[in-house]
Length: 174
Image 1 (cartoon, rainbow, N blue to C red):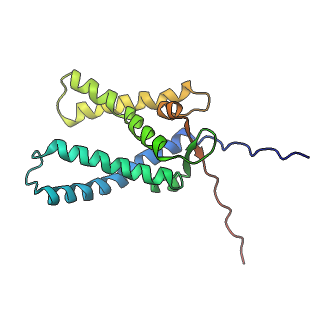
Image 2: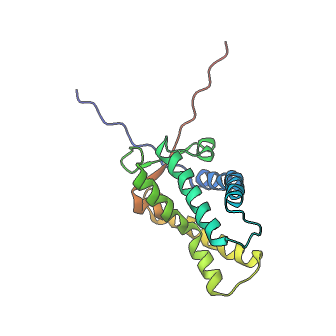
Image 3: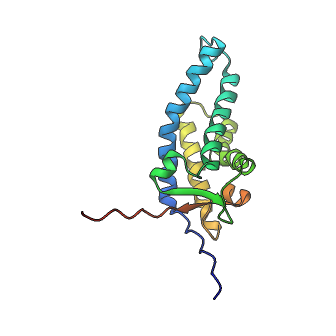
């Protein structure tokens, strides 16, 4: 009798992936705030616009390290664990550093088109820019309908997938 390979994990539902994204944003607020304080202390930054591009580059690297570490060490950030979503390669294996870095860079597709559209339209103010970025994010999320496994565009390009992590059974009464 031949052993059958395990069936691949089911894709995580879109609403849970988006909930994890929202929760990730809340958690990253604290991570980026702490990193910004470290940057300001190390560079003697006295004004928010002083060294703005250096700060942005530093925070971009902090985010790359954050996601790269979690995605290559278990495939889950704290938010992904909470919402029972795991990142893995399309073949079910864990991610390596190169693929995690490529996915991180391509995941900016969530935001860059909306930011670029707002810039090209000459928009100013948080509400108009936020509205355009939100519309871009909604359009990007809708692209999952084009993929047979309902994965995001950056996952399709990187041959990764977000899968459902089943609930662990609770122990019965003693």
